[in-house]
Image 1 (cartoon, rainbow, N blue to C red):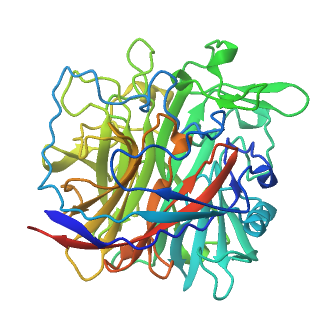
Image 2 (cartoon, helix red, strand yellow; image 1 turned 90 degrees about the vertical axis):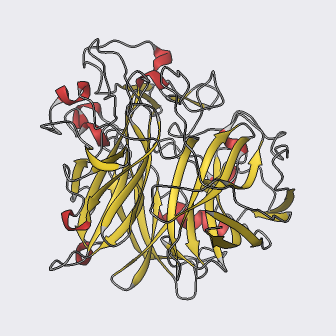
Length: 509
């Protein structure tokens, strides 16, 4: 399968000055070091250098995305090759790219509005039509939802959101619905999967035959050691995956140090992929904490081995998609073992019939060309700590890249799907497109750009998603005009929203 870009329009970047999340410890957007308006040339050749090389290298980076200190790749990557992993993609696409100008604006009015609503985004806003209105989900360790003012879209530069429509739709146990009530005694028995982070990475509307419409929320969850300074001295939170009596040194806690830089310890970090469901009519009156179902997929190597050691960091950065028959979830499995086929680290996919409405136990992983492996361990009990030692189903790697996130959209009027990935490659941090007919077999990557750097904050369009030309949907696009949106950390604690306008041709030859 081949696909080629026939016209790469002028890249347009709208910027939300929104604080980067470190689980509720955000900086004031007014501290941005960007000028009110600036622009830079970004070439699309693979040998370009980062235009961010001079930026402050002490910027705060979300723990769910930052490479480990000893590598330019995320922890849990493929590399201990006891088993050879060879994926043959279809024919390489024919690509013609133009240079483009990215105009970066520090939009304080939007930053002030979003902060006033009490939300910050780590992910680009995810758009979903619910009950006849476009909702924007603004995700970090808790997730806000808001509607747009009349005539406004994500391309607008002021008064974008209707503040009276705001609603907190998910919250981790520690954040406690945005109130930052970090009290260990109040959360000791909260569900382990939503302890430090419980953010909506994307949503899907489904309407099974004979049932009312429901909104599914695919949740990225974290459980880790974390330290906060609340003004009266540090408060420490232990992860609840390792044995509860385990003792840690101070350098085994994530959190901002005396220099204000957020540091992390990958050895005490665990990520979960859970599902939450609400009838569409209840969206806005109930939260996804109310509709939480718990984990729906499990790492192929589990979380802990028989010795109680970390077997994986879990499942990171999930994105859902529905073809009308199944709900698919793409996720990064960080399992550390390569000793058994189907239990390696990489981008994987699981699916469940839409009739199941995301129910735990209904998802099957894709393995060796079949959808037969249960995504959860046998006799799974979400309330049992014994599950941490259990392995999930075997699963095949569908893209052999060091993925940060992978998102999917249907190309309207064609049999094709497009995927966009943010990944660590030999060229640095890359944003790439791929095409598919079946949501499993993806063509060779078409590189949109590279940034030759080992730091996540030097890149652009982090955690990319698709937008249609009207900025009303993230799951269906026109090939003649669509957008890829993401966030950008410019070397300060501030995160911005960006987008780039594209057009593609897709063909099988």
